[in-house]
Image 1: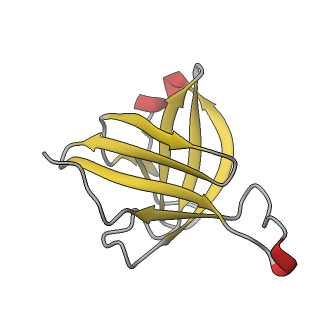
Image 2 (image 1 turned 90 degrees about the vertical axis):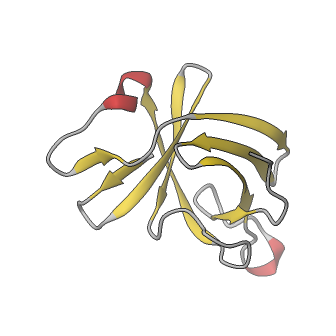
Amino acid sequence: MHDHRLPRPHHDLRLAEDGVLRSWALPNGLPTAAARNRLAIAVPDHDLDHLTYEDATKTIADTGWWELEDRDERRTVFVLHGRTGPRRFALVRTRGSGGRSAGPGGLLLHLTSQQPAG
């Protein structure tokens, strides 16, 4: 997880998969309650060496590992194992008007109500 200060303060969620960092911008950070979903904006994949990159406007907010629990065309359920322990999230593709997909950037990050022990 990176903490960005520019162009506007936000966090980037980065998950290592298939030799790259899959990345999503989180304008309001990770959800802290199951009833409070957060916008997740898909951004281009990053090289793995970006995992530890910091500069004057970008710092590492958290580190750890992740495990995939379930994935289909609409959602990805995973557990983040970070500094504060495991937390289960779902990245859910939203629907646009008329039931059409909202496109690759139309995602919500949801903290699941059932959390792993630990």
